[in-house]
Image (tube, rainbow, N blue to C red; front, side):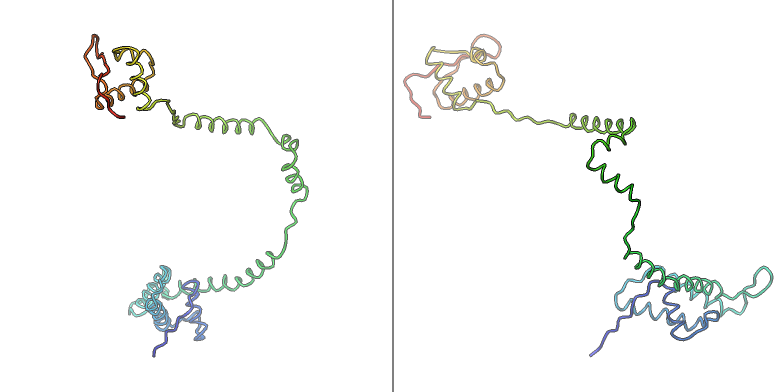
Length: 250
């Protein structure tokens, strides 16, 4: 049976390096780069085995450690402008010392933050009283108004009004027409007169919807064989007559 041990995640790569230095009691100014690089890479490999996503800053520091290790293995030393040998670890040590300095005051800041959160700020009492009174007193609100504020409010109101006016409007109108009612209307008219023209029907109700329903009702009556149609005089005009002697149930 195997057990899986999960290491704690450190806040950053320098935090992990300081942990190794403190754990092994190493001299931060003389870091054994070979050992600390191995420990750092082993930690990252372990995170990958645990399917923990490795942050880019950890990968960057790992690459930096390997670059320092390679430079220290080279036989030719790096010299500065004055001809002195440059230790490849100097930049890393400088960053670690600076990080350690800031890290040492983090606990103090956390404690100060906690203490501050326990306090209730008194603030400006007169300003708070005025703010409360403005919320309930219309006269106080009017005292703080000026022409610029009024113009800004007016502009916003006009903009909202224009937006509302330009919105598309859909109006649904229910017309008092049905195919059945117009069929009865046409048959009633044919009961009063032997025949009637379509133009006469239009003159009885010139509403466009009524004309449409009357025309559909005529087609329906033709299909039911209750009326017959004859072409009349005039453009698009015709006469309709009631068919006598046949009864068709509607």
